Length: 192
Image: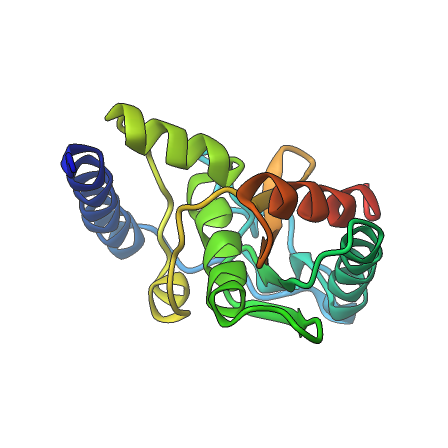
């Protein structure tokens, strides 16, 4: 088995981590939230890497639950038993659900796929395809995202974009890769 695509992906992640740590050290901290919980106008990080959102408040529990509810309806309609996870812009878990009968691998994969979608700002299928082809990708790593848990580069994770910024992501694990992405898409569609 050729491990070159994996080495390429790991090298790209390592360089992204170093670049992000350097950028974080040079940039001032984001502004505090405005009264009433609204994010300040300058809360986003801006810049390259897909324009990720910055504040975890960019997705709330009710929205994350709505995404997972819709994903579960799609999974039930397809006869699937999966795990579903929604993470915020920093890769922190906002909401998780494991359907009865979902396999253990799906439980680990779902939040990892959601984090990969946040890091790269694109569907995880694109990340997996790029890794297999040896194509470099950029990623945005935050200190919170580094500590949040695993990153899984398998099809099934989709970013949620609002106003051109990645504000959250959903990951689904337990079916085939294509089934997981279809279920995740149903979750995204519920909040667009």
